[in-house]
Image (tube, rainbow over all chains, first blue to last red; front, side, top):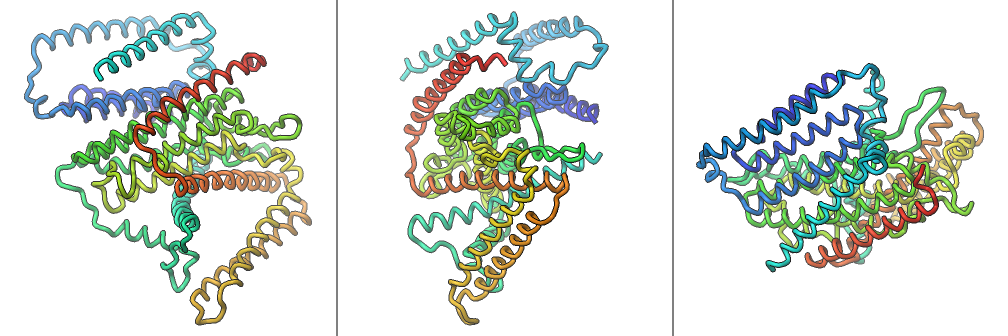
Length: 167
Length: 424
């Protein structure tokens, strides 16, 4: 049952990811991104990481993807104009280089993972509200976490300052 | 396998309950607006001479919605256009999955939680799922390929995204007070007494959060005084290109959102399924008297219906004679059934299963009463307050409610830390 759900959600997220980067219509791309995020949230839920799964929907699907859609509606990209634009060799090469770098970084982490743990992980030890909170707010990650929050706050204040000046 | 069957049964019951609440709420809305505006309200539609105070207008509406021509304008983005109303309805229904209607039913080693999904982060689930409701509106506006729906969708999406912030902050300060995000545990904690007398309901611990939550809920459900997304008569909203049942689905989603928001507010602030001063154990040990009390309430309701029927003009040719007969008959049946239940409660010796069922029924009734009371509050506000202007709406959300909710959250956290409650 869990395996079936896992493979269904996994293939759905891969398909949605592919469709996101291959679609020419920006709206279809954004909706594929949304599907991908929802499918990943489902994978988190399967792993009993309820907090991570729900936050994935709340933050990424509920806020960030909405923002993407918002911007698309505001600028109203002409799908025909986008289609007419052939990808340039320079941007293609840049994409390959950056993509390869990211893939290498992810692979390094994945390959460094220990093989499957001997005993199953207790259901409520990873990805619940309590465990995530303990890691982020009481453990060694407290300072990095707070510094990132501060950085985001500065970014928001900067955006407001920039937007205000124009009016 | 029986677990899956039980789960499916609970989900079906929940969806049916919510869907059937829609016509009831529409009826309450119409009759309450009539009451407030000193009118009679709808009372014409009838079946076989039965009118039930305008209740059948909803059936007529459904017939109208389903049989009207379903227009999909030329030039729309077909798939998102068709998907948008269905998405809105689905999301509204799914949000209710984590709300418990009564304490866990348990007897003889078996226990059944009376909610569809008992999530560790249930409160966040409601917010996560209902935040997806924005997509229904944005897609509807976008797919219509027309200026006005697009503008309406942008306006509505901005409103929904803005008011989610104070709403969630208010709910988080309640969760902080009870130290959990699991809805059933939040409700359980509200059964404790403060000062040895008052039940520790969320509204008592977090009155400011309650005001913020209800205000935010009004905005999230697109109800007056925040109904700019719809603005039935004046403003062109995101769904002007929709017709027939697709339009109906947007309306249904709105009423289901009202019901879910009321249920969540009852869960967080009004003690959920708690019967005041009667914890689950007490309800189970005194199941007999509790059943008698429920029977007495039912009998009283039946008597009221009977009295109302007797006040209608009598005689075969009188305009509402069949109504009088039907309502009177139902009232009489209610009196008999209520008295029978009362007699059973006082006389018979109930087994543990029956005791748990009686306790769950009492709690479900308490929860339903609280939820419907809040629903009526929504209706009452709609017919009492005028609409906000868009800039006023945004100012209220960002400049007043959000800072207030933040301050409330920080104060709550500070007070709890000072009391040493946070180290648990």
